[in-house]
Image (cartoon, rainbow, N blue to C red; front, side, top):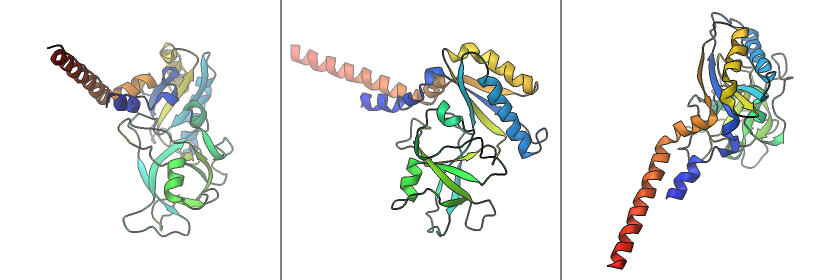
Length: 263
């Protein structure tokens, strides 16, 4: 049981969390009224942070793993009528192209998001392996059109252009969530997590990151600055406690058996 708890609490190791800093930004539509302004702000943030010494990459996404910021959406698959009570759904992520490299999300098929997926380009979407297995059991999802919402939704149709690996988002989940990713240029979001991959201790660069952001917007609030390592620890604290408790109980049981044998 202890080993089971430990395995669950270490399911974020693929992120290499010790060199990943995370922070949260929330801009307002009063200040950034147009979609291009929202996307432009986050593009500047990424570029300024990536230019700093000690930074390998930086990215923006609506919900980083272990952040508790995620949201789910229903979606419609072209030429399919959803069954009652079984509407296709998944975790909805708005992401910059750098997110997959920065968070070590592997490409499984076709391609990732790119800078060419701009507001005037055809609308595209990536899906996770779990989503592909859930809703495309006998065919490839690549090239399929989907849109966010019910069949009568007015949202634009998006073409699935790639499949990426699954990413755990909560230590209490038995399986990764089916996830879809859209371009932050095609569906800008006001609230975004920023992930920064560094060459060393990321906290030593935290002040430089905040300075880079305030050079773009001096009034911009920056919250939840912490390492991914700390974020995972905070989310899994209950499991860590149970693992420690089971270890203590196991030790006491072993000592009890040994005492009985000696007697």
